[in-house]
Structure formats: C-alpha cells, structure tokens
Amino acid sequence: MLLFWVFVSILVLESLVLWSHYTHQKKKSSFYKTLYRRVILVGVLYTFLEIKPDAMLFLLITLLLVLMGEIFIGNIDLLNSLKSYLSILGIALLFIIVPLVFFILLTPLVYVISMSSFIAAIGLFYLLFSTKVVREKVELTPYIFEDDDFLPKQLKNQVYMAKIKAVRLPINALLLKSVHNPMILLSKALLSKLDAHEVRGIIAHEVGHSKKRHLLYRVLLVLSFIILLSIFGIVMFNHRVINVEIFALYYMMVYIFYLTFKIILMRLVQRQEFEADDFVKKLGLSNNLIEALNHIERIQPSPSSSHIYKSLFWTHPQTSQRIHKLSK
Image (cartoon, rainbow, N blue to C red):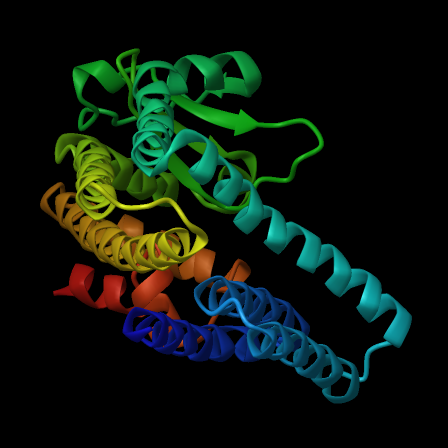
C-alpha cells in the first residue's frame, strides 16, 4: 500500500498545480471535473488493492462528496451536474476497466509489449507520414517573402499558410519534419495580425528548431520512455500471478512514469524554445522576434497566469523570459 499513498500524494500535488491554473482562468467547474476523475481513479484502485466492503464504501462516499461540493460550492443545477458527472464516471471507468480486461486476457507481459508497440507505431507514423498527411488534409498556400537567405536548402519554398475548413487556428507557427520534405506552417491568423518583419522573426525561430534537430530529440525522448516502461513491465510481471492487485500497482506506476516523463518533456521543449530564440539572435533578427512576441501577447494572451503550471506543463517559456534573453 506504500505505492498507493505515494501515488495519492502525487495526485494531490498535481491537483494543487491544476487548481492554480484553473482559478486563474476562472474555470473552477473544469477543475472540479478534473478532481472528480482523480477521485474515481483513486477509489477504483483502492478497491482493487483492498477488495472489501469498506473500500467500496470509500469509493461511493468520495464520489458523493465531490459531486455535492460541485453542486453547492459551484451553485450548479443538480440534474445537469448528475448527467455531467455520470458521463465522466462512465468514461473514467472505461479507461480503467478496458485496460484491465486486456491485461488479464493478454497476460501482463504481452499487455506491456502491446501498449509499447502501439505508442511506438504512432511515433513511427509521425516520422514517416506527418508532412504527407498535412499536405493532403490541410489547405496550404505558399508564403513568399523577401530576404529568405537564412532558410536552409530543404526548407526553400516550404513555408506555407495553413487553413483548415471550419476550424479557426490560433496565432501559431509549426515546424513539421519527417522523411518527406520538412515544412513550416503559419496560421492564417498569424499572417493577418503580424507585420512582414515580425513574421520573418517567427520563421527564423522555426528554422532554429530545424537546424538544431529539436524534433529528433523529442522523438528519442519518447522512445526512451517506451523502452523504460517496457523494461519495468517485464521485470515487474516476471513469474507473477495475474490479478487486479498487480494491475492496480502497474497502473499507478505507469501514471507516475507518465507524469514524470511529461514534466521532463516540457522542460526539454522549453529549453529548445530558448535555443531556437538564440539562433534568431545570431541571425541578427532579435528585434523582429521580440516585436512579434509582444504583438502576439497583446492580442492572444496566455490562457494561464499560473507560474508553476507554466513551468511544469507548458510547451513555451513565459514571453517575458524569452524577450529578456533576446534583449541581452
């Protein structure tokens, strides 16, 4: 049970971080629903570990307390709350019961290998076909601009305005790189709101990602996570009897692995953003990017003002930090 209480402690800490994020966004209802899912998870896992009447009672009481807290504190209509939370309960249980069924049917070792192979297949698909799929599914318009001498050969004539029907893309830019030709995508909103010299700074930033092979490092980190998870599963399930208690232990360890991996990945991505900014600085385009970042911050401010949430779970560093480094 030690692992269970470690798991609960981690969930509590994560929930506190999410609370700071949602309260800044004034979305307490979203936080309550997130908390509700975590309570379901804790209750079900506790029931798996301690299959006793008191465990079942613990699950029912905690679910009821969170639901009533939402209704009275959030001043939410009872019937709508019940409908909403019953759907969340169904989905949450689905993500526990379905893995449990496969866990027992396939045996733990095959389950671990199957799950890791599935994640690896997604990564392989991205490496082989991401740019090809985008070219087929997204409306792309070539973006021609002057003074593109900083573009490497493989990115010449590979900068596009991206538009998806019935979807309003935010102000954003993206580097896609697979075995096919790489490309830089600029949203229509970005091109309509920013000046040409600001867009040039954004493009240079994306070129920085390409030059420093940032996408490759991200893929390697994901692969290393899969390998570690597979090794852990093989060691843990060797000569073990299949039961719900073993599944509960594995489920908790996977969640801890995942949360740790997510934080490490976000820290890596944030560091890569600074490195891409440094590339822009070496090109002498710092002012272009600074103006672009200030402009974007004014018209599309960050949806969260929680510093700890941004530090742990955000893909980009704070704009003020980036501008400070670019100004040095």
